[in-house]
Length: 294
Image 1 (cartoon, rainbow, N blue to C red):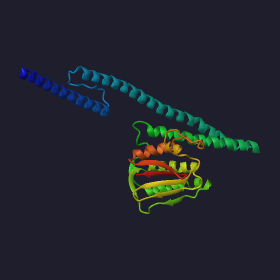
Image 2: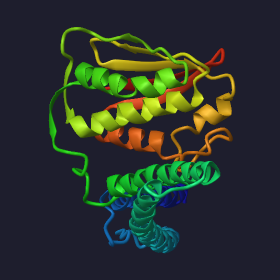
Image 3: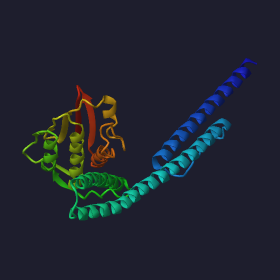
Image 4: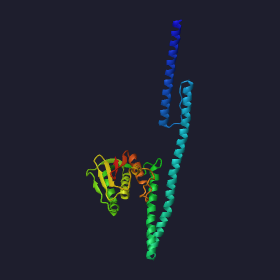
C-alpha cells in the first residue's frame, strides 16, 4: 500500500516536472518570438508548440496586442510621411509668392516716393526677408528628414573639421559683431579629419552659431580639441534649464526667439547623429554650452 502511494506521488512529481519543463519551453518560445518580431518588424505572429490552454491563451492575447501595435505603427508612419509631404509642399508654395513680393519691392525701390513711403517699404522688405529665411529653414528641414534622402546634404568625404569651423565663424563674424559679440576661438592648427559631408557640417556649425546670435548676452567662446570635441559657450541669462533641455526639440522656440521656426538645432542634431556623432546642451551659472563630438 505504501509503495503504491509512493509510486503515485512519484508519478505526480514527474508529471509536474514535465509540465513545468513544457511551460518553461513555451515561455522561452514566446519570449524569443516576441523579440524577433519586434526587431525584424515582420507581419508574423507568435506561435508556440505547447498545448497548454493558458499558455496558448497568453500567446493569443500577445498576438492581439501585436496586431494593435502594428496598426498604430502604420498609422504613425503614414501620418509622419503625410506631415513631411505637407511641410515640403507648404514651403514650396510659400517660395513663389515671396519671390514675387521681393521682385515688386525691388521695382518699388526705383520709383519716386516720400520718406514715409520709403520707411514703410523698408519695413516690408525686412519682414519679407525674414519670411524667406524661415521658409528656407522649413524647406531644408523637410528635405533632411525625408525618407530615402539621407544624402541631400552632400556626399561624405574626408573633411578638415577645424577648417570648416573656422570658415563658419568668419561667415558669421559680421552678424556677431553687429550684436556686440567678439568671438573667442580656440581651434587646433593641425587638421582634424573626419569622414563627413562638408555641407552638413557647415550647416551644423551655422545653426549653432546662429543660435548664439539669438541667445548670447554679448559673448561667445568656441573651443575645439584634437579629438574633435567642439564646445560653443555663451552667457544667456534669459534662458532656463528647462528651456535648454528642449532646445533640440522640433519647432520649439523660447519666448524671445520669435524670428525662428525652432528647427535650427533640431536640424543640427539630426545631421550630427546621422554622421555618427553626438550633440547636447547644458546650462550652468547662466552659461549655455552646446557640445558636439564627432
